[in-house]
Image 1 (cartoon, rainbow, N blue to C red):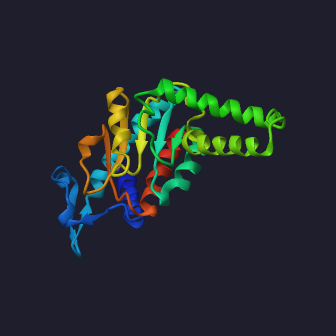
Image 2: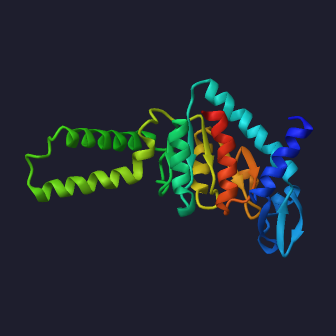
Image 3: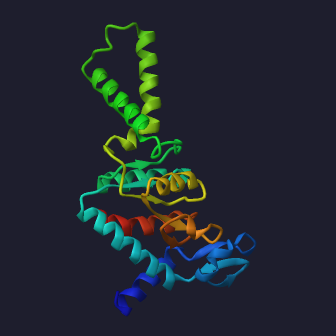
Length: 226
């Protein structure tokens, strides 16, 4: 990146609140290299280093896109659920925006079967194949489909393990990162000042609580995955 582009990116990130970390008492020791200072008892992230790490992550994601591989987008905090859904649909990538199910990556064979169950049941319902059942039985089938959709809707297009997992709320989805690394899948993640950056392969030091911050980073991701 040129200096002017770098400065422009840093200014935009500052305006989006990307640089606001947590209170100083919550600092993870391994985040010290990414800290620029303190304001009102809150750590400020060095946005120059965020810009550098963001570009590293985007370059990696760009390569995955060129290779026609998939990136699994993960964000399950209530405030980011709709954002993850919107971005995933725009870039046509799989996503998890509800609860992360243990084994999603490490037991993908079983998860794949559940995804097939969902697709099969939805197809049968669309064809009216359940109309021969009683209303009570149809209601039970509808509830089962709804339950499957909550858990697996975002994974329907994931026919094989993804090449990378992008996590916006690592504090809530550390299990997703652990599963990915066990399967040698690269992990990209937003890392706030209270988190261990070594949990992921491509850490992006950033505020992971403010919707404006998460949205800004995801917009940059969207540009390289579209």
